[in-house]
Image (tube, rainbow, N blue to C red; front, side, top):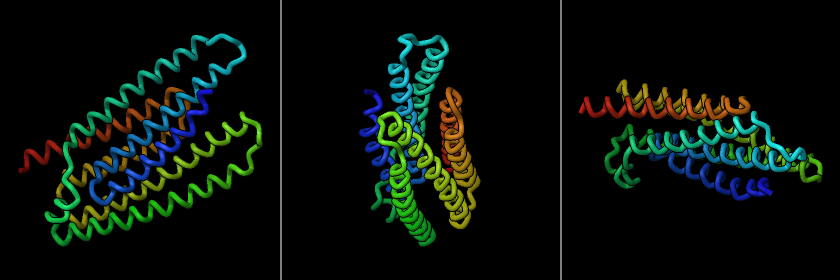
Length: 237
């Protein structure tokens, strides 16, 4: 029953990916924040799958080890959501697109244009990856269990590949940042964001409680880098 929640969660995830790509040209921090939201939704969907598997267990008993894993996972999810809130709290309010463009120098306008090109590239990659995932589902058995497993496995590969592309995008953003500014704080922030995205990608290669631990380390690192960047900005004003 709980596995049926996969469908609405997949729709929400697609919308979050759209927001992630949408915010890339305007704000790197908002772009990273939506990465965190996407990974949080992926983990919540995984929790529903785990709960569904436990409820579908024929033994009518849930072992102590399973309860331990679930408890750690739920505690980790609460910490993750608090970290995401902290990230947005430190980030503060964004300027509107119109305000950003009015304040932009020519170099900054070129930087914004390059981010728009990268956002378009992400859209193309996302569509191609989505089509490839749909084609993979054609080879799955008709049985319910096989189909649910196939969707979960395909989804994991899909998001793992998508986050791999986000790492490449982050590296390109860092390279373009060098052309825009030589401020140490911005370079360190964007470098830290790359490490955070790499750790998020690594979470797809982990199992059990190590998944939420890796995700929380990734988000905590991103929060720390943003906080350090904001401290630099205040001191250098």
